[in-house]
Structures are given as structure tokens and as C-alpha cells.
Image (cartoon, rainbow over all chains, first blue to last red; front, side, top):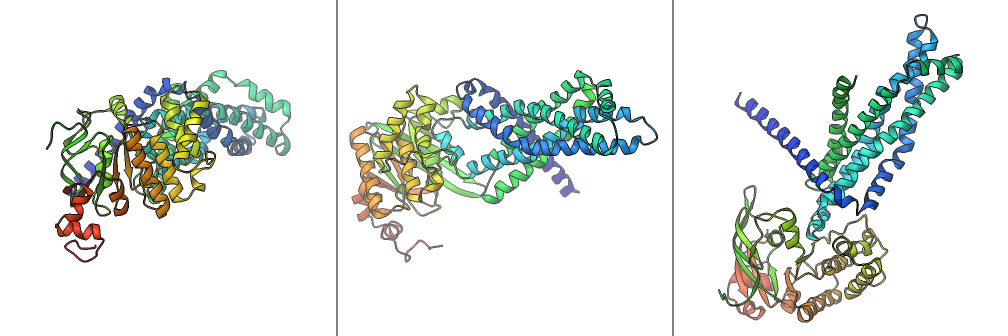
Length: 256
Length: 255
């Protein structure tokens, strides 16, 4: 019994520590913002790493996501719902849910992991300490550009993902489901609201922040050598993915 | 202690433990301005931990460190960064930023802290690299360098902002004897010409004897010797004798 209580206590303490650590880091990130205007190149570099380099993977994921949602919706509609609603179903699903969430999960796996691995390696090889000794605060120098790049690039990636996913759904409908172009597009337009797109982008914005801050926090928490870096990388992906899914639910209940 | 001599750094009753290991157990040490202090001791005895306290990389559990009569153990944030500007540090593993070129590493502090033009920064970087015998390597990445070269780049980076004090964590380990002597000469020259205070951690006794004004020996968390290189040779403490003569036989067990 005492052991169980101790276990619960330890877990609670480490959870509270984690949340506190992330919030403190967030504070230091915003304190480092003015500095970012002097070091714009750091931000641009991270935006390119996070955004441009993730593009192929994100687009590949989205085109198949759109395609599969078209196939699955058509299967469920069969003999029950007219096919002119196929475009509406695909559009809604992609813009509200699939676009932002899948993009975020893909980027969390790709970029969140690499942020944690990079900062973790810098931590264990004393590169972070070296910055400190040069009187360079590592948070504005390393974390702020990565965090801001996440906030900016995730919505951008999501817009592109939305577009490509709907395109994928459209092509499948056209080529394999015998739905005419006009039927699909009119259905898409019928229930297309800009508000939905905006809500999806707002989600993406939040997810970008989650990926950036968790990757950086895990990186800075790294202890030990290669094993520690591996652990941090895994944790960064797991924790940010879980937070993305929880955040998705919370935002959905607030926004819709 | 002689209070009239000007001290740059004063360490008073410093304690540090990691879990149940008492690494530093009441260290008292002073470093005068323009002085070269060499800290010797066995690997893992806490020499690196001790010097990392000097610029606030590690916070002590107990005790005080005064830099120019200012207690730095309580400083945080920008105040700590202000004190760190007085120090340059060479890490044991050089700790070069591996995503940057040699030139960017050496110029990083200059670009961050000064308003120097790009041209001036480049000139300064060139000059510092020349001092450590690595001219023309600006565009190499750390991964392309040997261990000894990395160390010299680290030294160039530590000197880049013209600090008042340089902390050298094993400056000659991993260098060939000739290059080690070049670095020793450089440290002596910095002291003579620019009045730079140096604190070097080493177990290379040749280097220690050459550069040290004073040698301090750290053993089991305490300073067991503090005096000139000549004095340490004459010391009759068996622990010290065993260390400076590099013998496996003596009061200190090898493992």
C-alpha cells in the first residue's frame, strides 16, 4: 500500500514538474522574442527545415488520406446517401479533422523527433553549456526559432495538405467511383465554410506550438549519452502525439 | 592568506554533491589577476566540476565564489551572463557547435555580443585561428577535424571575445607533444602580453610545470596542495609524490 502511494506520489511530482518546466520554458521563449528580430536567419532556417523539408511527406500522406476518405465514404453511402454528398463528406472531414491532425502527427514524427535528437545531442556533448559560457542564452538562440517556426509552418503545411487531400479524394471519385466531376465539386461547395478552414488552421497553429515546445523541452532534459538522446526522441514523439490528439478533442469541443 | 594581493577569483568553502557522492568537500582557493593556476588531480576527482562553478554552469550546494569581489553563486539570468563575459572556456571535449563551421564557431560570440562589421569579425576569427596554428580552416566543420584540432578551435573560440580569464579544461590532452608545447607557449604569451588570468585543469605534469605560477592539487574533494611548481616537487606528501611521479605504487589505489 505504502509502495503504491509512493509510486503515485512520484508520478504526480514528475508530472507537475514536467508541466511546470514546459510553462517556464514557454516564458523564456517569449522573453527571447525581441532577439529573434535580430537573428531572423535562425527562424528562416528552422522554417525551411520544418516546412519545406516536410512537404513531400506531408503531401504524400494527404493525398492518400483524401483518397481513402473518398473510397470509405462512397462505400458507406452506397444505396443510402446520394453520391452528390461525397464531395461534402470528403471536404468536411479533411478540412476540419484529417488535414490538421494528420499533418501534425506526421510533422511530430519527423520534426519533433529531430528537434529532440539535435538539442539532446547538443546537451550531452556540452554544446549547450558552451553557449552558456559564451554568455549566449540557449533558449532564444535554439528554442525560440524552433517554436516560432512550428507556429508559422504548421498552418502553412495544413493548407497545402487540405488542398492535396481534397484533390486526392476528387481524383479517386472521378477515376474509380464513377462520380462525375460536377457532382463531386458541387457537393464540395455545398457545405464548404471558410469558418471550418479557419478552425482547422487554428488547430494546426496549436499543434505546431506543441511539437516545437515538447521537442525542445525533451531535448534540454536529455541526460547521459546516446541512450539518453534516444529516449528523449521517443518521448518527444509520444508526448507530442498524445497532446495533439487531446488538444484536438479540446479545441473541437470549444470551436464547434 | 595575503589580503593585499589583488584576487580575481575567490572560492570560499565550496561544497557540491551528486546524489551520495561528495565531489567537492570544502574547497578554498584564490586566483590572482594575471596568474596562471593549474589544478591537478586524478581523472574524475572533480576538477571539471570545480571549474564549471566559476562561470555558473554548476551551482554549488554550499559556499561562495567571488569574481572581482562579486558573489556569483546567487546570480541569475542577465547578471550571470554579464559575469560570463569575463570568462572564456575551453571544454574537455572542445564542445564545438557541430552544425556550424569552424569560422562560425569562433565568431559566434563576436557576432552575438558586438556590433563589429562582418569584415571585422572575419578578421578577428582569422587572427585567433592563426594564434592556435589553424589558419585557413574557417570553412571546415568540426566533424572533419581531429581531436587535437577541435581542441585548438575551442581555444580560439574561448579567446575570441578577449576575456579577462580563460578556463582551460585539459588544454593539452590529446595533442602531440609539439602542439601541446605550442598551446603552452600561447597560454604563457596571453598571460605576459594581455595579463589574462588562466585556470587550467590538467594531469599533464609537463604542461603544468611549464605554465603554472601556482599548482593546486585536488584530492578526495579537498585541495591538498597549493603552491609553486618548485614547491610541489619538494613536497614530501606521499599522495602528491605518487601523482607527480606517475606511479601505480603508493597510498592512492589505482582503481
